[in-house]
Image (cartoon, rainbow, N blue to C red; front, side, top):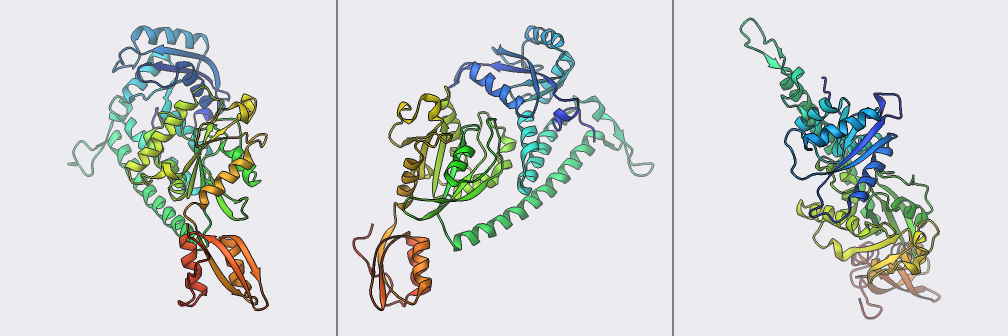
Length: 446
């Protein structure tokens, strides 16, 4: 199958780095951020896969043109500038229709991609898990299928039918759509198998439960750096957009002595292509299952509030499609990262419900750990149990799953006062205690 519009392996079709122009069609109405910040983000997206940015431009978009999106004069002016800069690839930071994309390629005499095509290429390069790779391929094919329109003249050719009376046969575009459709169906089956396997793994994790804390936030907010600082892990962290795509999980020690599981996730971005929502479903499912969601923000970024709104929009969209519960805000905590760029935590001016930290210097991390511990303790109950001195299994279970707040040792038993989640309390009593002894309170329950 030949497809001149395929965005795959952009940087592999010419000797790197490919000379690239980034064009931002801009309509200020209803925008929470300014054009300069949006253009800077588009440039960083392009640079993140090794493209050489030799020309940038912001073009005021008064009325989108069906044929080229931009006005004819704007197209001509940009074409001259790109010819002078010897541009081989133009990235238009907007959603282009197939016709617009093809017409711009003809006018500018270079390869043209839109925002969706670029982000798909980034995801295709960086997805590491099996499901991530499958989801990215699925998104690529869905995107390519939308590009198979009759504006591509080479796709109008026909293949002969079977026998002498087989009719005009199957056109190339129909054959390509059929092949893509078959591959999409197979990919969906494989993805469903991977999801079932992950569901079994999650069920196994829930049988030996630890609270899950998920990091979410705008791309390049410093989530992976914070993840490493809190857990002592060595997850890949780089000052670039979409440095990590696949979810990573590590143990987190809390001040109370309890352990939690911290999950690092892919970063969100404004105007996220709809084809990519499913491409990090694994990450989104971890967020949906999390006991606490840490919304990590770049507190030093001038568009921090706009980025916050973009993340909330995606999470609210998950509520609408049933992926996330409507009460997710009640189990979330906002973390203003990169306080070092503002002169320290004291200079951030965090509001109620926000915690300022610097994952790079470590300032504020102990306050964050304590806040995580406090939030995870909400809803826990306090109970007391008399454990035989020779039954180390019960004692170890309580220390491993709860917060032991009192202990009295005698010759034949150990009186333990412990705070547990309601689920853990029920699990402990079913496993270890006779019905008559279960649930004797140690004091007022929370």
